[in-house]
Every structure is written in structure tokens, then in C-alpha cells.
Image (cartoon, rainbow, N blue to C red):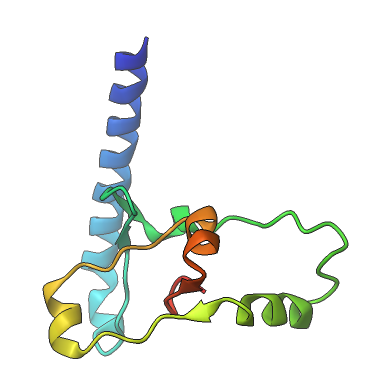
Length: 111
């Protein structure tokens, strides 16, 4: 059972990677000057599409407007930006919301 679930997950991820590669091959010329990240590495070293990191927060009535949400995100500390040589050498890791809370800081992309 677990093996079948893992095989299905692997197949889905392979299809996602292939479709994103096709999309990038078609549209790369349009966005040549922009730094666009299609995949990001998790804290457990898995590469996932960046869309998998975007999840709605259930805030109920705690966040009444986008400005309240902006204020809430601004309370999370920002990690200093890596230099160009460091960022080229190391693949950045994106963290889940619980991991960000535990660290107490996030990169600009994670915010």
C-alpha cells in the first residue's frame, strides 16, 4: 500500500516537472531578464514546484484586510540576503510555516 502511494506521488511529481520544463522551454525567451524560480528545495531537501509552498492561512477574523496581513508578515524577521557568490553556490531552502515560526525569520521569497 505505502509503496503504491509512493509510486503515485513519484509519477505525479515527474509529470509536474515535465510540464514545467515544457512551459519554461516555451516561455523562457519572454522572461529572460527576470529571475524566475520554478522549483525550490524544502528543509528536508526535496525539490518541489514553488506553487506547493503557497497555502491559504485560516485566520478567521484575525486578519480583516490585506494591510493587516502585511503587518502580520512584517513581524517575522528577515534573514540577511546572501552575497551573489554564496547564492550561486548553494541552493536556497524554503521552509514551511511551522519551521518559519520556529526560526523566527524568513527570506524575502518566503515572506
